[in-house]
Length: 474
Image (cartoon, rainbow, N blue to C red; front, side):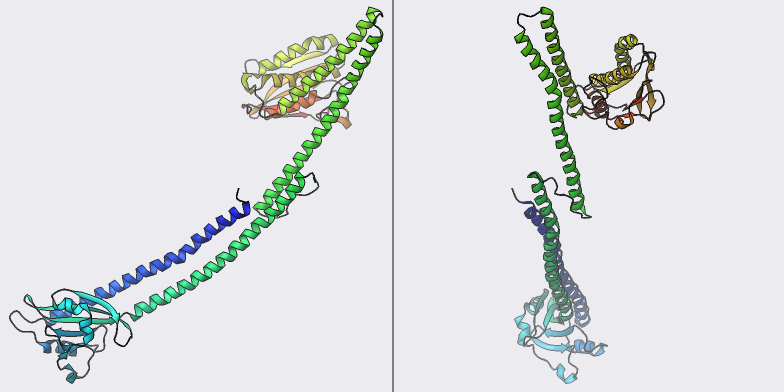
């Protein structure tokens, strides 16, 4: 597997390649622009050449007159204008030149060899169009030459040759390309520096986080995973720190649970072992004594079985992946649970009042889990309420959900225990195992709700379970 920092380097490098591609395509665009400018320059020269050719063309049936071209150049406002225009006859004589200022220089003379080295003049004298870019004699400037025919009827009488330096176009493009190259180099250097700094700024804290995480994995829980950075990596490290603390609490809770379980099982197991030893010694003893010890063994076994069942139920309530989800009538479940506890309340002289709306209340959840939670709440309320007292069960709408309240007129929860009663194995009830309220709260939270002990009021306590009217995640 490729290490994270190497994968990050590759991603940053790819991003920089995209950045560096901008100057590259700019150079490509400059070349395209160069061709476009040269094409515009050539088009302008063609229009001028056609105008000159039309102006000096002889009338049909008459010979070509070089003086006509020289007169045209004499009338030009800009004698040293660009482009330079020359006229060459079909016989190869240079008869007019817009750059010659002295009239005597208009004498007809053979065209310079450079003209015949270019194919544009030959193409024009053959009746076509020719264009070519080449250096001027002596290796000077780059010139663009075009040539067009001057016709006398269907015959070619001469050729108009226009020459113009491409210096301004090429100089501008050359400057642009040089600037683009420098920008390319500067951008490349900057991109490399930024890549190195960015990679370091990411891999350095991630490396520190990896080292700290490895230390925690090795058992050093005091190492902080919070890097103290105000960035995405800092937020990630704080999330890791919170996860570590929750895991630490979970492991500590697991150890406490193991110790509590050992303590809870030790007493009944010791009692069972003692009863078995006594039974072995009293093989011929009174049958009533043997029955009494067997009853003790059975009672201790039942206590351990009840404890195990409650632990399994608590684990199921705390497990988001536990199944058993279905749609059921929540109002009917509350009424049925209260009816099942009614005989115990009546036997103790406690009035059990049920105030649940008539009619069904569809609810999505785990029915046996909520039933056990309500049973634990009602059982505690009946147990702590003296004869003549009242236990009241109510169910009322609350926001987008429903609130189920179990209130009693008992002595109330001692102030020192009000924050502890929902903890595992904490109990104020003689003979209790301290799991009833823990199961009830876990069941409420499993269904997206809450279970709270309302502020203490004279004459008892009230536990309120608030449940949203939506399906619990199965």
